[in-house]
Length: 83
Image (tube, rainbow, N blue to C red; front, side, top):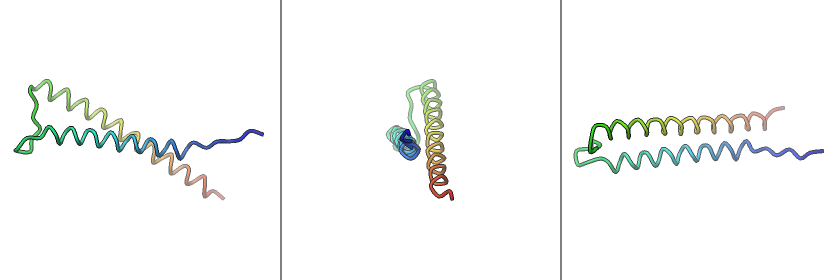
């Protein structure tokens, strides 16, 4: 008889932690780029476009990690309370 290990909850928590870490890092970078007027400051248009695109892409992937983590935790909860 094999022992069945359930890694759903740790994987879900890890994905949520990754999501929060990504959101924190991007928010911190955006905050540090702000000037006295509250606008983000870039040295050129191309740098602004590339940075914004990259940050949106990484933020989207981080949000997907968060949703996947919530889904895993929900599935673990449903399986735990199953009759």
